[in-house]
Image 1: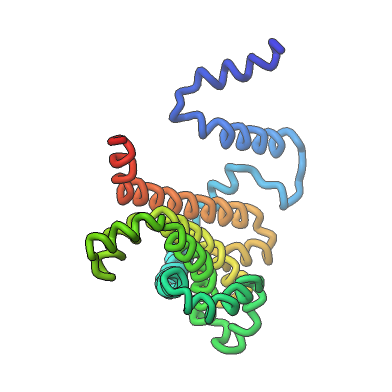
Image 2 (image 1 turned 135 degrees about the horizontal axis):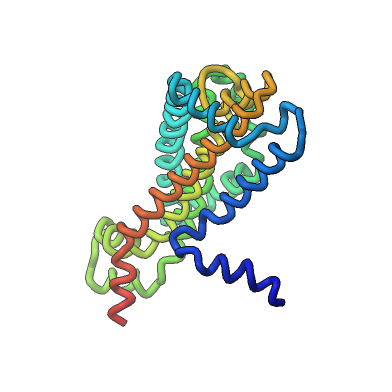
Length: 267
């Protein structure tokens, strides 16, 4: 047991804000040692330095910014279109029992279809360009927003709605003062999932509809030429972008829903 306590004690001495970097540093160290001391000449095993140099070259030449801007542009449009339609449909299903009975069965059937199963049809309708990719990304954003909006509206306590009726709130006042605040956590969950799914769908669309620029196309170029350093650099960029998007949305959620903590503190 004492031997197991040694790494734990070393880890506890690391400042708390730096502990998240311990595992990445350990992975880089093992990776570097495997390349330097393993004696492998395979092009599939490259050093972290080679990946760094490839990344510097991508940044200096501007290729990274061209690819990244193209991917983010597609993701942005797909996210806006899909989440906007998803909010409208989810609100309709959550607010109207009649709409749920009419539209709900069709929606719940469509959501069971794998997203990538739509690729052949989208490519036939829109071709292999940006229109098909944006449509695919919009579909990825649509379903999680609908589901979480629906669940958020249906989870509003009945007592809250009764209070609104007692105070004779209009429909707009009920939505703005009662329903929206109560459903806000679920809505943010849907938006957060939608943002993650749209980024993944953007890469999938670029990979399967291989035309134009994008991070997915960068990964394809690396694969076709056996440039493992380019592939690994692309993977790092994908992970960093996903991390930043998730972090930004988490910060926004904490600020916009800070009233929940203040309200809970009163009781």
